[in-house]
Length: 160
Length: 185
Image 1: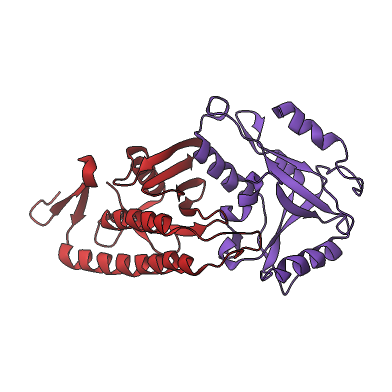
Image 2: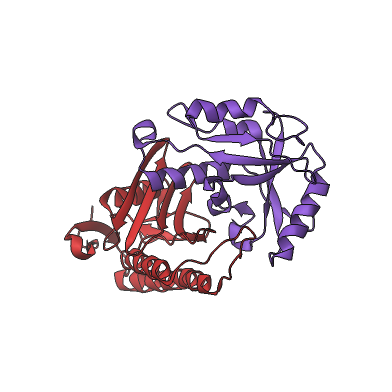
């Protein structure tokens, strides 16, 4: 899929359960299950490793039954032995504004499920060294660090 | 300048097999040896915590991050340790350490709008990138037997941004709130 095709996916609903495409003025949350993903209250770049997976990085949209979706996510993942820590939030427009040499490096799709209407995924767009000036691994780690910068401090378990 | 009381100490830091040497000049009018002892003691203490965290990664279980995370391989932990040894031997500011769900280990330094990250995802190699005042640079799969020259320069740039003179007039940079230091070389 080309760069343009990936970005064009944001303009149409991607799930029959989706309440809407993901808008710039929305806020999304990434749920964390390890204390090794944050330090001194700040989320670390490694917490966003999933942006490189084929299925994207799961996030929850605060506008759409967030608490219910959060509870279901916690329940599902704790069943597999994980321990919920908290979540971090970011504005969609801040993620979409991350660019290298004019190229966007993330796109966000509304991947709602039947029991999580506010589910979405963040995907990384891989750029070649000619496009971004960085070799593959440096690029990957650089954009991972960039996205970590737009997420706010951890909302800990007790506050959630 | 009163040269009779000033002692100029030059640190020649050999960089492993690379054969590259770097000079660091410290003007010490008080007690060089005492300063060195205190500095090394502080450095040992700080790095000790880093090693402890690194070795704790051996205990990670499958799915440790809730997203099917795996633990780093022994080779990656060993490679990271070798590079931390090099950093410590060269009296480089202690980095912070992190581990990803893909089993990769990262070291990073952050100072205002300057950031350096070194990552380990295979044996005896590192990849790094830095962002300095809007300039981004990176390299992949560099052997770990020395500090790559560009990375070395980035360490200097990071510290020169906030360098201060210590009480004994040594050129030492306070980089973060933990009072970690790095010699300018």
